[in-house]
Length: 280
Image 1 (cartoon, rainbow, N blue to C red):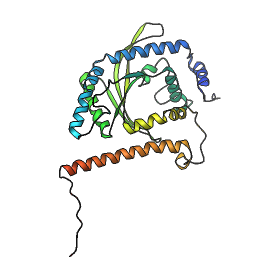
Image 2: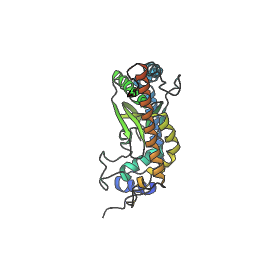
Image 3: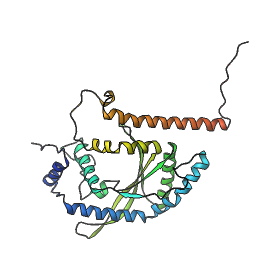
Image 4: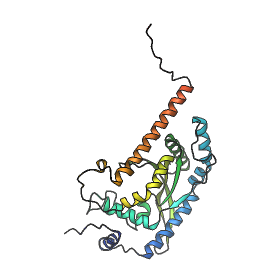
């Protein structure tokens, strides 16, 4: 008989101990925090990160020269900050991957179980940075620049343009790195991992901050029973308001880009106003 699918973090922790002999404890948390702090330090001192941090102001000026608009929210970019994923967020992410979002349950998920023995290489955003640009085309502009730095410094760079049903739009860049981290027994090991750069627009950043608490709560729910109607038809639901707000803002951003393109074409003489024909 298949064990009941865990639907809470405490039940998930019990399942880890029973099925994988993984005993989540204060020691697990302490080891994670020590290892991820080491990862952060090594990424900060990497040639890729130092080059990217130095070039950020040049990106802003180059985009301004090309388009006549600011790339970033500030003409003098603040230092791009690296952050680490809190332990509780990592545990929740492993819960989602292993259980909530696992379409192959009770078998292992498509990319394998996410456990303390491998989560430093399995989870790609334990160390991450977030860069906000003003306009939609700034996303692809920065992606191209980041890929140039990655090629120059010999780092793999994977790009994912996220467009989810729930109205989330952002680019996620995974930068491959080899880092040395402590083992549980305080020896060290070198692993191949990646850290993440999230790129988003000003409008999406605003809506993301407003709805962050809602999305986090929604992602931690256990799989619900099929509903009589989809959220797209339940206009009184939280999903309807939150999700469509993200889609609407993305559409507005596209319209802003269209207006910019028309203005640029008109200024260069490529776009001529339509004339109304008159009959004599």
